[in-house]
Amino acid sequence: MADLKALCMKCRDSNRKPTMQTMTSPVVTKNDKGRYSVKGKCANCGGNMFKFLSEADAKALM
Ligand SMILES: [Zn+2]
Image (tube, rainbow, N blue to C red; front, side, top):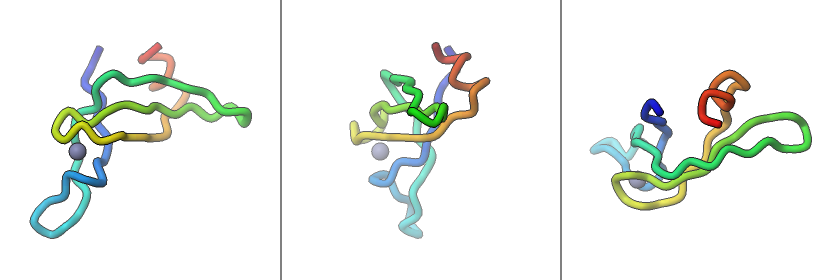
């Protein structure tokens, strides 16, 4: 699987902006509106991560 990256709200840069981090143990879910999202953990700090996915991205992860 390709690395999945998401913004981590805990890992901030020197300008206090969230930074892109690799997501580990991603779990893809689909909500009742047919929208895909993925939950996982930040490889850097272990914090929870969440991001919306396109259908194509979600299927590539499943
Ligand atoms: Zn983090």
